[in-house]
Length: 116
Image 1: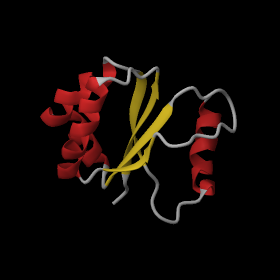
Image 2: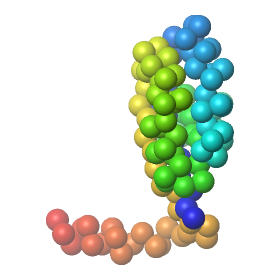
Image 3: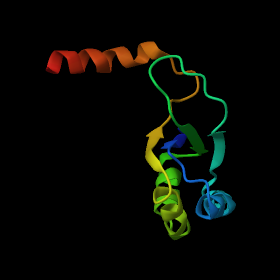
Image 4: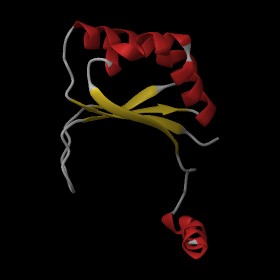
């Protein structure tokens, strides 16, 4: 089964009691869905473009698990603690299977090029 990820890019975080509460409670929302932090802030070295925020990546065992976590009452209860106290964007993305190689994307890219 292909893993999936919740990704957030946080900027202008108001580090106060609300963000502290969010951090205190998020782990318990992840556990039932097999979520675990892969990246949580950390040192970021820009290679291209301007990066003015922090990256968070949470791994889940499946696309269903990441969606169920995000939609869960437990996570929805704490979500405003982050969204109302930071400028952030978030997304869910499906990973690639083990052994994946970039060349596998070529037929899809060529089909899109031919369709336009």
